[in-house]
Length: 319
Ligand code: EPU
Image (cartoon, rainbow, N blue to C red):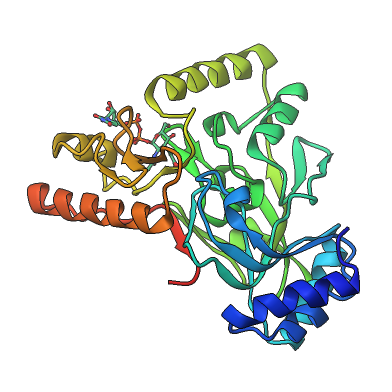
């Protein structure tokens, strides 16, 4: 825990100069929060792209109650909250004003009867996958190799060719904008391609309905899928996964390859040589580099093929 008062004041005052949120408000807002609190925290350290300016304040709530308190205090101070999963995300170079929350301490997994597993929002998909395999539960094989958090995967209805999140979600637990815990059945969520319409709030846990299956069978599907990804995707360089949604039946990666843009660069941002729908950070890419490159890709594909690509990547922060 780093929230001793003196340090807060000192750092928060520096924050005040460039942010729209008064330092006093930021300070009041995190009062009593038991989790970790960091002021002016560079978000590049928390994104898979290794890109992104600072958050005014970055909070790692200790548990759900801690988050409820933060939500109430932020509401009272009229300071916005943004939840960061860290993958599928590009944070702009000037960072994010207000409070950024990481759910990484909300990482418990509980087994319930009849193949139901409750995972807190900050659980990583690979961890959840290992848990399911250890219990001989199938239903998440499609997610092999997805690095995001459970909450992130629900919010964007993450998926691959093999399946998507909505198939496994039974219910979701949220902290609503007033700081109360609300449980929401899957039937009240509208899922579509890489989208989920949920009640307003922060997803802090998910009940997943999994199915008993032979462990070796699950493992072999997962293994084969991981090998496919390793062979076809640039997994050793920082990236945010696929940049564009696939337009209909066509693959964005194939279109980008067809128009000759594999390997194209702006600064240290590069269209992967391995997979056209990935932009990789070769070292010191800025968000501005990535955005310029993405624009170029979108424009070129549109000019040469007539297809308008839509972003899957979420771009956030101060323009
Ligand atoms: N292809 C090319 N050139 C390329 C890339 C792909 O010709 O540079 C061709 C492939 O040969 C294949 C087709 O395009 O015939 C589809 O490629 P791939 O199998 O790699 O799948 P994808 O549609 O590009 C989707 C998901 C990925 C997921 C993979 C594997 C989307 C937008 N992407 O990619 O998800 O990992 O399937 O299941 O749905 C992500 O969401 O971040 C992501 C990377």
